[in-house]
Length: 141
Ligand code: HEM
Image (tube, rainbow, N blue to C red; front, top):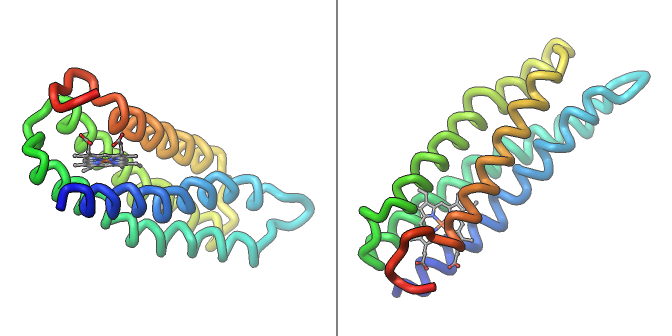
């Protein structure tokens, strides 16, 4: 059972978080493109980010299910991961997606958006490493 939950968790991380990371990273450059922003591309990139952000809810849901099945819900590495996942979700929902919306609606500058997107990607990278290294875990290598 744990293996099924973990497989869904990891598959969701690859299929949902991956596309958001790539599309969000491409957005600021497409918005800066001279002479005109590449609007159809921006619309698609924004849509990928929005849709896969929702699909990405599967990642923490199955992460929590995996953790309770393994009995590691109280482990420090997991609690830190949950906090960082929540922070990444907040950066995406409250800064990155609205920033893309503003750039689309009014051509607002994307400097801050590019910075927020970088923060978002960094948070995922840290969580992924934590998931693999599991510092302090006593449940295996
Ligand atoms: C609320 C957030 C999360 C929880 C509760 C959670 C929980 C877990 C648990 C319990 C495991 C199994 C570890 C083990 O085998 O002992 C795991 C593995 C894994 N998680 Fe998460 N996770 C969360 C978020 C994420 C995110 C955001 C990502 C990536 C973007 C991610 C990627 C992975 C990967 C790649 C593994 C496989 C690591 C391995 O088995 O070596 N997780 N997660």
